[in-house]
Amino acid sequence: MDKIKNQLDVIKISGVDAESFIQGQITNDITLLSGEKKSIYAGYCSPKGRLLAFFFITKIDNDYFLFCPPCISESISKRLSMYVLRAKVEIKCSPEDLNYFLVDKNGIEKLPNNLISIPQNKMQTTLNHNRSVSLTMLDGPKNYFFVFGDKKEISKLHNAIYSAEINPCNWNDVHIESIIPNIFNETQDLYIPQSVNLDLIDAINFKKGCYTGQEIVARTHYLGKPKRRMYLGSVELNKNPELGSEIKASDEKIGSLVNYYKQKNDVFRILVELRIEKVDAQPTLNGNEILSLKMQY
Image (cartoon, rainbow, N blue to C red):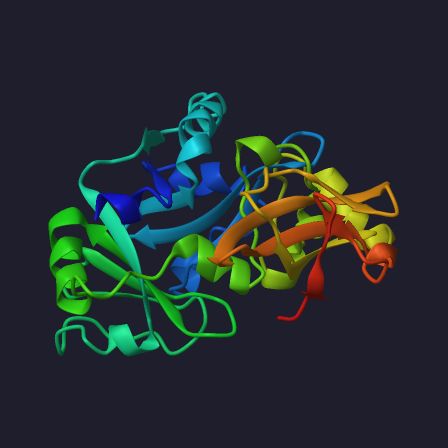
């Protein structure tokens, strides 16, 4: 289970002012978690409107859980703590009593009967009878489910679904295939939310109140179309690329590498942020052409 846990870390935010506090920090509307029994994606921006983190956010009772890569979780927790001021909010990074795993449609059918109802809609979240485990159907072309909650119960459920011969679903791979971004140390402060498609996956709410970086995000939305977008593609490389690496066309920088995973042999599946008008200009990464670029949701 530890290897699975390392794919994402979690920041727990609790307290009577937790909802209003988070609402002033993220690009999406946190009240949706209470009103519609769902989970959300959201960006966390600098004052200049550039992404410092991308979160998957879910809720159990009055506690909010913000998932992001371990490489930025501690620094993001500290940054959030700077804005608590007099609010009644507690922020805790990496609670040891919690865990999660990812499972596909076939695996979810192995859960014990009557344990928890299976979500029927994307980003819908359900809870078990004692509210110690939550289940969310993630967004994307295929049905994957995020199982999260009490560490001991999650371990039992994991063992009930997965055997030693079956590799668990990988969060990073699933998100890349679904054309959903993530933000790491190397890519913090590089992208505005729209350039990595947050508006296309309902990770931005343009009707909510103020949050850090809102002015830039709103200006891009209301004054014109984004000039850059994120695309999924494939490339052959003889070693792992570096996050944030330049994407070029005819020696001109036209974008950068958002995320990747190794699919097979020397083939990598990659997410790249590109200038829209250069998508068909045979973009390259480390000198190799990126093939089959697409942006479909």
